[in-house]
Amino acid sequence: MCEWLKSKGGIAWASERAEQWASSLYDIIDKSCLYKNSIDPNYRSRINIPFQFENEELRATVLN
Image (cartoon, rainbow, N blue to C red; front, side):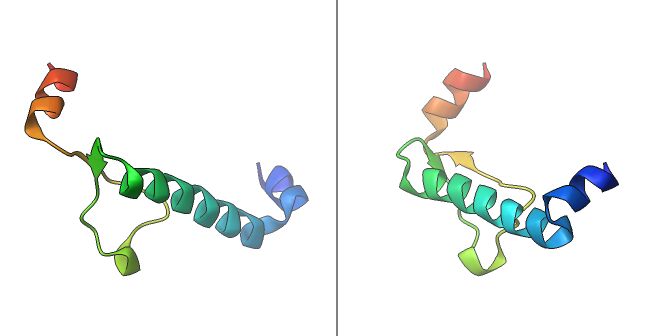
């Protein structure tokens, strides 16, 4: 794993990739009419991308 990470560009590459991935997911969530995320963008994690369903009826339908 360490050799693979090194071949990709190391920690700098992994950090940039995590930022791109998180940004893409947050963008989808923020523009969605199905999901919401109430975390201030200044404090959002690049690792754990939390979201909720926009309404309780949808949540109940999906989770039941």
